Image (cartoon, rainbow, N blue to C red; front, side, top):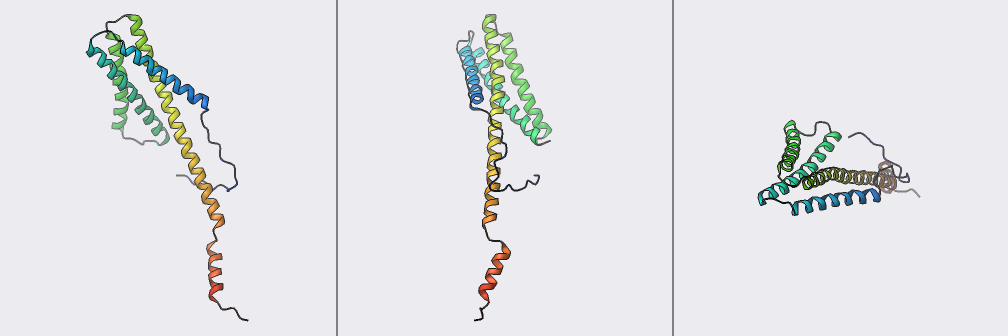
Length: 182
């Protein structure tokens, strides 16, 4: 970790970029709408129970793969080579398999093309909003960490300024130990 100088106790806080409340609301509302569209589409999915179960599992698999891939990419962007090549294969492979099988399932289902299009668009909407949600949550976490680090440094600097130095404490103890000549 690089050396960062201690801030002065009265120094203004550093610029910590945070998302606006309007953006956070938009991300959560978009994700909620995507989940609702997928839920409605899958709840009234025509066909056999096995096809319905396959599609629900595919959507859940895609959703979990999106969050895992978003975390993997962000972690490896911050720390080069943080994960092993095998884990990279598992993450990217899992995402590809989830998207591939779910897409294949949607394409091969014998249902009304309009309904198929609704399921496909809501599925893609779910994937994109999940990536956006993952980024927003990670950004908030990183901003909270940066703010906590800054606050800790500020408190440490203030404590160092108010605590007596080692040399003044030693001089005070020497003065107390020597008898004063009157």
